[in-house]
Image 1 (cartoon, helix red, strand yellow):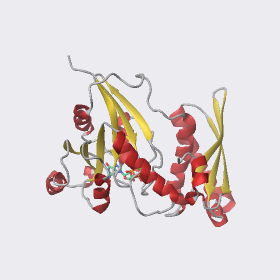
Image 2 (cartoon, helix red, strand yellow):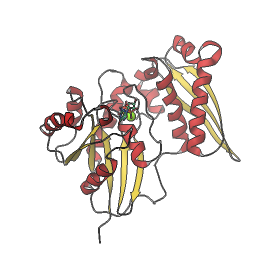
Image 3 (cartoon, protein in one colour):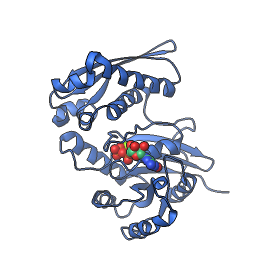
Image 4 (cartoon, rainbow, N blue to C red):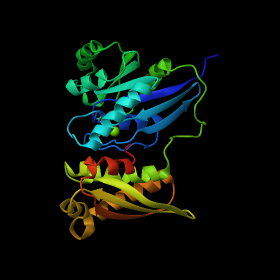
Length: 294
Ligand SMILES: Nc1nc2c(ncn2[C@@H]2O[C@H](COP(=O)(O)OP(=O)(O)OP(=O)(O)O)[C@@H](O)[C@H]2O)c(=O)[nH]1
Ligand SMILES: [Mg+2]
């Protein structure tokens, strides 16, 4: 009889390689927010997948990066480093056709004794499979990987192969979570994240990095979830952009977030959103602690 395996898989890599997309596709539910902008993920998001002989506890993490040097982004880098230190195996996600200094910096922070599976994502962008060979060869010189697996998270290519390799790297152990549990986060968390995703997708290049979403109240009234949220910005001028002309921008983002929440929660949502200025919140340790960035 095959022995049951269970353990944690840290999903790590430089920003924008598709870590959150990969987590969502592996567990079959949109748990972690995704945008074309780097450094979208700020929290460790756990997604649990049960197969007949294994429980995978995936942990998505912020992409290690150096573009922003404020306390918020230094905290994110610390989170990313902690998660690769503590996991049973690391899924090190790289872009199929690109490997550089930023990827190398992530790899350098993974303890030497940790098992690492290199995941070459976005192979849907590569025209012919043969083009991958030199990249695989180069990558294999960077470290002794347990395996190098080319995948496409977006088109779900090679994900069963990836799971089988990851399973082999996990310890024999009983499940950590009950089989029906999908994540360790609650609806309040997902409500904030889904709204934050819309800021990343619908606002300009720099503004999302200056915004945070706080859920002020989350109440269930029969089958309706009544959610009140505040978007924090750093300056008055940013507030104007987030709200938009006659409130149009805020309305658009709120509606998109509400629809996603209704899909995820499986029920009607009322979402009220306000925008407040909290000067310098990205660089204020006390404020950040209050926002859960300990
Ligand atoms: N073509 C292609 N695009 C992908 C694939 N996986 C992810 N993407 C896109 O890459 C972008 C970044 O995806 P994310 O999943 O947010 O990347 P991430 O690594 O979590 O990024 P951070 O949280 O910022 O570190 C998004 O536009 C995704 O749609 C893939 O397999 N193929
Ligand atoms: Mg992410």
